[in-house]
Length: 304
Ligand code: GLN
Image (cartoon, rainbow, N blue to C red; front, side, top):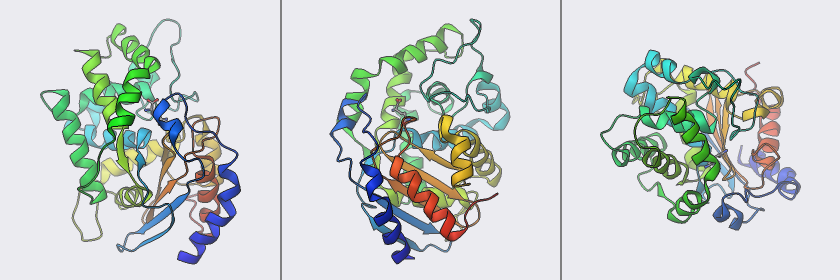
């Protein structure tokens, strides 16, 4: 298996040069575009890794399914469904998706920015500090890694330059989808995006989702039904307007982030974490997708 991962990385290296770093968050443009790492965590607890699999980067949108999981646990399925839709937007992750002056919850899904911003208010807690602390604690438990923490530089960089997300949030507020203070909510969202993880962390988290909440030691971290909810949402919306193409090329639920990470969930089998910060035009890791495509073909991972 380790040999296979090494081989895949060799084949994918040329692709890192074809993508571009996310420059709209200045701090992310300082990354080394040639980094490439992969980690596979099996349901029996076995981890196999290659390349920059322990290198830390910011989780960015890969936190969205974890935010959704926590919102489901804190509110139940009906309340979450009442606050945010589940249909693919077919549009970029930061699109202002308004039709005919009406913006309804059902126009959004939890995997695009507007849906995720809105979901921050569904995390249980009195204040946004408490909500963020609960999300961070949850991510640490899912990854079995207490060292996971915030990248202060990326957080400040994103907060200082996040006009588009600010515009989205105020639009949600104008349409009655956000209550309370928008800036506090946005601060929670920016911090959530700036949590530092590695491909190995994402592989572990992906495996808990693949096992519908169960860890290798039998401990349950969330109800199986919520795992199925999140995996289904990942399959249809996790790679944004590239989700259909990804379903054909790779065929498993997955989530990307503009930090260069991808978390893939192979139901009943394994979690896969990828890291390569050069992105395609949809904001997905270019070499990361290619590596997953090769892994899926060689191990017959597609659920289709
Ligand atoms: N922090 C990023 C943003 O809000 C997350 C987007 C992403 O990873 N696709 O723009």
